[in-house]
Length: 339
Figure 1 (spheres, helix red, strand yellow):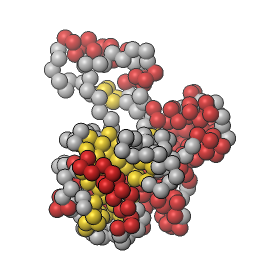
Figure 2 (cartoon, helix red, strand yellow):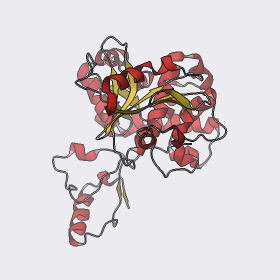
Figure 3 (tube, one colour):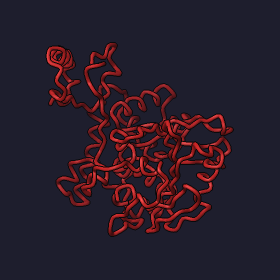
């Protein structure tokens, strides 16, 4: 196993030659925290390496249930009986606390106290922004402001102007910062969904901080603060759900591509759209503990427009109820992601 191989990139050539001489699979694991190959003119691993993105620990992994069908695999079957809930079912403050704890292995494995965990996350973020990328940017203060703006807008569709003005940088600098942090798996974008059957859809991507724990570290907020701020609460839950779904794609059967959907006047919005060969699934994330049909109206719209292409939809909520809201659309507690 060669960790952080990009620090000595010539090692990749040595591995390539070794694989060419002996092609048995599994002889080498190359791990790194940067998409270094994007910076290189030639990537010599094509046809020799199988790439897999690694993310933080999901709740399924933390509770010891990492195997079985993914959430999207089950949702595509539109069968309510496929979903199970852990016991006890979390309440809203517990979901927020879990999100703020983040998905990094170190605090989880060492079972840090709340104080130690907050200190670890703050230190990690500080070192990332002031040391790890210090040689690639000008002005550490500006890149920190940019990340803070991203944390405030995680799970949203901010315009370039919003990011620029919030961070006090120009367009090119904002794009550079975003690319730099994306290459380090700290930020990620969700493309806008498009379909010829749907009209007037926005093309702006949805932007995420990959680990919700870094939102808390950047903004210095606790559970009580998030609960009192409705906008931040929605973004935190959306980011937390994405942190559970995103890693599963690497092991899923259907291998969907993820998008978001929003029309230009803001009347229709679906947080996550998973598209695969068989059709699509839709997921809405709500802070309510008692969802009703109105909470599923955008999924119902999507189902009615796409008809048979729509496989299933879920309104993920913070209550204990697991039930059908409409044809192929279910109300599921967020914890059904790992139940």
